[in-house]
Amino acid sequence: MSSKFSQYYQQAYACEQKNFNQCFYCGCEATERDHCPPLHMLQSIIDLGEDADFISIAACYECYALLHNERLLTIDERFTKLKKKLATKYAKPLRVYNMWHESELNDMSDEFAHSIKAGMALGEEAAQRIAFTGFSYATEEAKVTVREKTAEFDVEGTVFTDFKQALNYCIDTLKVEKSDFYKILVEDYQGDFNKALSQYRHRHDKVTAAKDGNCLIKEFSKQHKQNSDFVTRTVKHFINKDPSLTTQAALEQLYNNYIKK
Ligand SMILES: [Zn+2]
Image 1: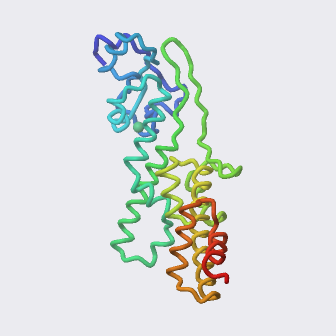
Image 2 (image 1 turned 135 degrees about the horizontal axis):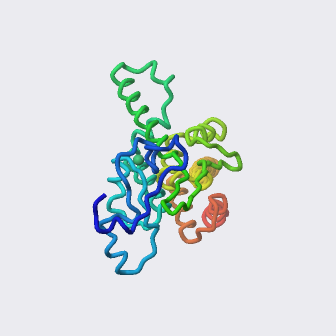
Image 3 (image 1 turned 90 degrees about the horizontal axis):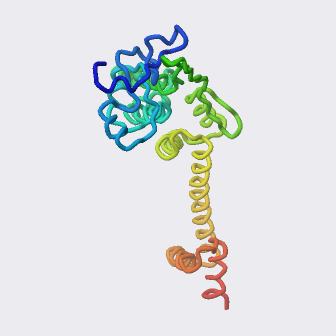
């Protein structure tokens, strides 16, 4: 890198041979160096006297390009941002990889099975790149930064190291509906299983409560020979006035006000 600013950066090198030539962010083959912070932002960072890592590290072209315009001043911030960008860019194939199983493809037309398989392969590669934890590196000053974080996914106390396994546990053991749950997990809670489970159950309980409410209204209407539209409307009216009312309590109020003689 020939730039008048290059002198500001320490070059970082992988400590272990197996990581030589790997992209620090995703594990692919490295062809570039990511400057933290980016070279074209250095002047403003120096002018503002901001603190930064001032390190350059091996990156593949895609990670280099994704981070090129990110004004993030530490390697850790860049690492976290890159994973989010990969997850967004490959959201569709990741979904295919996480939701489909090879065995489901047998009954499909060849054309459809072929396109799902291609999506699964791309999604699997993206999942591996997102799961890559980086590597320990040393700078020219011999300052070593150790990284030995393995991704962990806590599902109510059961810990998984693989996202898809954690997801399958939720589907097979905790019996969540997979496409509803996946949407909440990935889009609303960025892979936090416990928050997603809590939200999923909250919504699911609401649906169940609404279904129970409809049953109660039907039974009540039958028992007291009332038009069920009238009962539904009146219950809604009572609950709007007092949101703490349950359907049962609203029905009792209706009974006392209009039916009881
Ligand atoms: Zn990369």
